[in-house]
Length: 530
Image (tube, rainbow, N blue to C red; front, side, top):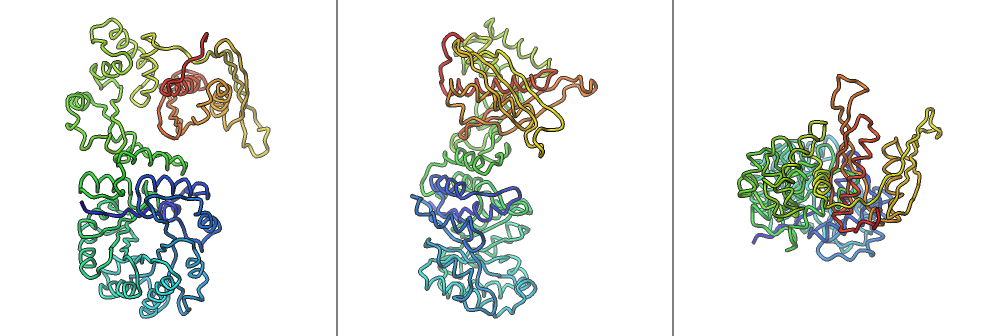
């Protein structure tokens, strides 16, 4: 089995993506998650660029890694300066990790027009920097920036930058497709030539500006590259970096490579969800392999085929990547799905059973008034439980009230609403209030706050998405609304729905379903006497 090393740059290159910023604690958590997944290298930042990266590297002694090696990132020395006098390079050399990655220009255009130096001086910059870092006890990866553009424009010079890096003692040569515009066949051709020239590992680093980062990375591996750089979820500047989650699954399942140090690929989806939570960015539903919709089926023919044999519409078993199949409830799904869904809760219920017929009619009634369960399977599971009486409520609402005012009491308008919620649990009443950004946020906070003394596991639950759909626009402000909520506990996610003419009530219905579904899924017992 071919061995390919994955090199994750989420904490450095990924942090350059729009809307991303990591605290030091975030970085430590992500490193642990990537190490557990089986990634070989984690590029954790540039110690010369900011205080947070310096603090992170100062705290690396807190980490106990089993599979990954940390890498510090930096640039070659500045022009017309000795390596040992370049402050940034010295700070990189002082980093308490063995591995460092240093980037230098491989495109003559960049050398003369951006660095404003000669091609000969650029070669010396590459060589001197690597030699200095080696003399300080580091192993050095050389990132050949803009390599493929340089290769296309002036091949001899692009290859010369690799030659001086190799001669200076670089342990790996990483070919960077920095602008993200090359085709896979162009990348493969150049990688093949470089692999034939140098007896050390060759890596590939691609960007997704043409939507080809994954394809180019796989083409590079086929051509001989043994290290693939990217970010776990494709985060990065402009259109992002190569998505390592997709690449890991492709390499393992399609190309027969070991890229996770023999760790199970089934950790992939849970790790992606965990990292997206730490990043505070919602994992795309359509993400290959790991997205919520990656193995979701809606059409009746598709569902029928998958229920008979999953290979009809699935190219891999979802369990292999730690994901799961989802059969979406909708008007086009068919009765077979209804029975399959019911069977998970009440086994052996046949299609002609009066309870089944009643459930089908209930579904039709609820869809007629605006419910849509294809994106809210958790709510539909609760409908089944309530109809089949395999359900005991976890609390009863006594009263809720939301309060808002203009102008805001806060001069900055940061807290615009408050909510008061009173419930009974097991015959015991509890009341609390919370402030939030708008009435729904306040209601959500108050509901979880009032229930946490009874059900402590709810402390880990929070909303990740909130959508409102007006169902009858012609009725203007008198229209019925559908609220769809996505919740998570950091390990899994689920969606619930509420429909009402009152947007607060619709939100309340979805919030209650979200909490009760999680408590049922966790096996928490409903309090007696509710």
